Length: 277
Image 1 (cartoon, rainbow, N blue to C red):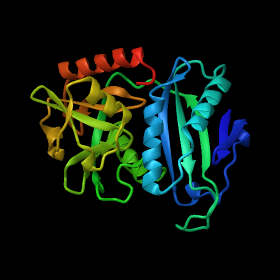
Image 2: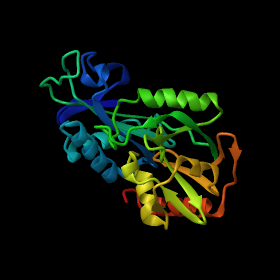
Image 3: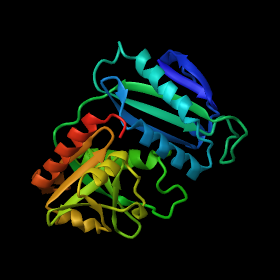
């Protein structure tokens, strides 16, 4: 079952009835924002933080964000309606688009389209590999820092990474500074300290990234892309990966180190104690 609505009104419908117009601005030009979060034991993790980020993304695009109460209710309905079909770990996605609009960049006057959907989640392997890509993130983009449905750039980059035996692609920004993955934030360990690019690099303000910075001694730092060639440890963070150790960067092999393991263990413990930190 999927929750579909316009503005602040909507309802649950079967998947084959969850229809969105081909004239929806999210479909025609990618004018939309979204959040993906994990569902653990029938509960959404860090929903409050995800809704706050959805608001920020919508504001950057000039979209009207739905009321949090409406979205919380929709999330609860979707989880409950799918509880018998999806019994293990799951991912849930909230999408808000510009609604029906002309076939161009101009918006219409329709209410935003809202969709809340859920599906089973496949557990990531214990470690992963990443590949740097020959394209950049634009830290001065009008939508820098927004989690938008305009993901074609990520699709191309991820295909490149897969063709190089990696599960994630890593971008530098236009200044050659380390930025982010297609759907993850990146941390490097240098001299025993975990470091991640600042938001000014153009990276997304990841929820797991945010929690790692709050719960551990990790900190932000402006990093050259070449840091990946010298860092002692590397790991990714995302809502589906949590803290995910990296054992290969391009052709460079590296271990799962003590700092990464400690941060991973801390995240597992504290996230298990509070479902909405």
